[in-house]
Image (cartoon, rainbow, N blue to C red; front, side, top):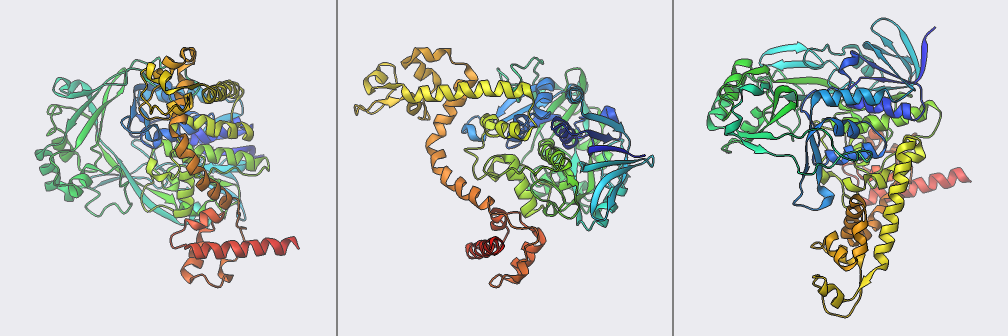
Length: 621
């Protein structure tokens, strides 16, 4: 008799670990199937977590009690807050990570979940009854049944590695691809495509001339990713910075026809915002050089990741190119760079819960949905795992909105607009980024997670204490006032208009700090630093957030206007045939999603709202 679980998660990468952990936290009996247990949590490409936009996703994963932030805090060896010259809304928390420590942390955290089991093996097929998925078939022939299945296959779906004209079927270096699942997905009627990503060579750090390089230090006081981490204990290191040269560019230009990307060998589209070095030279040939960050892969590992020169050039060209870069003239290469091409599913075929619309019980997360990056994958895995667990227990799905999270922005982008290239998160994608800051992820999402059931007791207790202190301080700052003369005596310059100002108002001035108001109200010195910083940032953005609230209310109202799954768009007179086709194909969940479909005009949205209202009235009568 077949074994049965509530949820099966296929794949042990960043999406898979978050999906499995989330489902298990929800109380679902969960099976994580992966080729090798010892590769769970592997950082396949760059040894770093976070960055611009990506750091927001990590904080949001953490706010929902996910794995990634805690693992990054244990494995992080160079914490830096990016974009500090700009406002806090677009700061980008990032850490370089020790690959071994990060992977060990992920595996250790997964042992905390009693509802989670792990099985080694490959999944060769989905088991289905009609259009409903109810399990998987392992390569051993064993059938494992489940109420819901989450696919997080990364680059393994018909994965093909390219180095020059050499092609090797693989999911990543040294690991076999998944060949049967793509055919199963196509048999479900799903539209698939091909995408490409790449990785640079790995270098022997002992053969790098570090004394000739500019060095980049970690932040003096590292800021943890996780709300549950008090301080970073791991030793911090520096990275080297060098640049490509005219000679580097000459070598690439003369051999670009030998690159898998430029020989016509690769049909998949690569990420625009993480281009190969061939792309950089081809697109930005007038530049004198391109920065290369030399990132050590671990505290006890001499391997170095040269960030900025991913390539699919042949090995002899890679060696010549790399050795033309200052500081790398004598470097030894441990692993050559490569491009990898893989299948993905058009994400417009998913709903906002990341469920496949045409296959009940099937959820997709990560690179299979056309995204790139650990953080994007982890965030999707979390959402898919939560919703798979909800589905397994016959509960309603949970959705994330563009107004409440970067997770919501990403999922809405994917399911509404689809992808033509690997999707990467940026702060510029979020219309409400003043509200969606990395510093307030817990306040935005932890209450939602507690309600859903994916937040554990320890985090919930800590959050409630923190939230109470934060609310109390905010009220206190509204009640503390000072006259212009009192402020001037404390070294704070304001108009001498006789009007008393609150402490919150003083903090709203961009050039004012917590130390300034502590001079006026010395008792505030005792406030815990994280709470003081959070309230200061709230005050800084208060005026702007009030203005933004109207827009958010409108979008929230539109999201509440649900479009029935069987709504007949073809019957709408007054819509162009092109719009009818797009609406029928993409099947938006609500009016807000419909409004974001390319070509939708305000008049078309108004017409759709009117018809939906009439439809509801008809059903009510």
